[in-house]
Image (cartoon, rainbow, N blue to C red; front, side, top):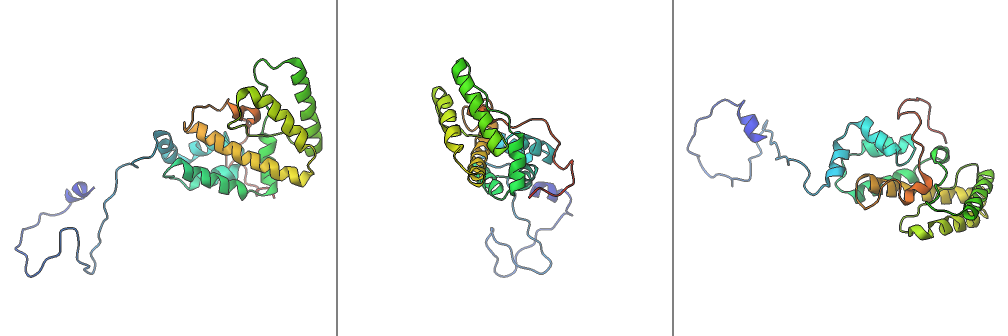
Length: 228
């Protein structure tokens, strides 16, 4: 940057310094003088996928975020706070943004979640049991069952889902709303990590048990106030 600026400055004449001089790395504090700090080129240590996310147009970043959690305010907030120095900083910001969502916004995000997908080879009896459990859950709480299965082996996923549905059916609506919000927070973290290539998984791995709907308005398309 200094070399580019020097091309536009008038030539100077070398003069012998008069009196004491300051070390080379310091500049005198003279009135009217502006010191331009050095600027780094790029962000050393930032993973390429995160760097692309940091520098993407806001609309593209928000669209990618909405694929992780269908909450326009969450997506706008994460996009607006870029750049992130590392993935933990982004995940921490995601957690904070989920915690700050109003109940109506959580309901909006839950409404966009699709039914959990059954693993390949699920036998018919398990399919029937899971369908019945989902039906009972939706009838009581008014939204699909969401669960983050990060770290759960694939062969144990079905049993975990059935166990959690039956257990959470005993919750009252307020208790279940808090549990579902926590699962959404964990799902958002998992999907962000998968989206940025921070782990050996894709969006169809354990997150597929509660995938967000891909259809819906783009961020900012509606002007109404966020639901509370």
